[in-house]
Length: 260
Image 1 (tube, one colour):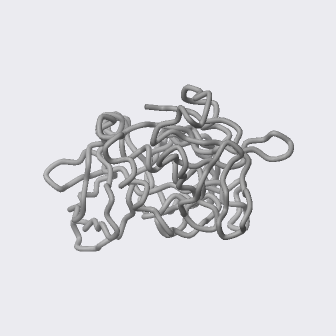
Image 2 (cartoon, one colour):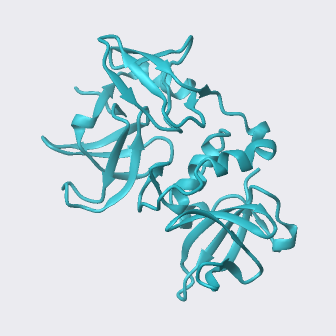
């Protein structure tokens, strides 16, 4: 019987809504992301991510199976790539793979990690996330993604969406939140007023039907960093985000949540 668990072996792998290359990309797996296998076919694999329980279809050629022992190690070792633009891993056969911030490095020590029978030498910044650094380093981590282009389902500096940004910045500090804005809005503690907000709180925005459609990270009570067209900083007030480019409010404030 094949393993019930797998791990992403490429820098970025799309998770799709259906088992088709033409299907919508829900989100992305990053190198080192582990998952539970729900269903397998010859060309596709239905998975549930272990980090945020997101479900979708991936190409199995972009992943490898994890043994029960390797899966246990994965859950115990949560080193990740820090704020590094060009981190690289080198396989034992000399092949290189360029990675992205937020990738998990399984069984990492002495600049090496391994899984699936392959050992990698890591060249880059690896960190063991610390929630205690959140207040002091939140703005630095957020600004790392400044001007990254918007990409639906994206989770990298080369393309990211609003909830991908919040999830990855929080992951940098070992704070696990769900994937989509509407899911993230169900977590944390409610902050009653914008004047009570602290840097790092998440602000959520809704549409005319009252559905949460956007999220951003408060840098202060009047500044927010968010992904809309690109990752940018805009003013915010009790009505919502004010777009200086458009000369009007672009997103309507619904709720503020605190996670730290």
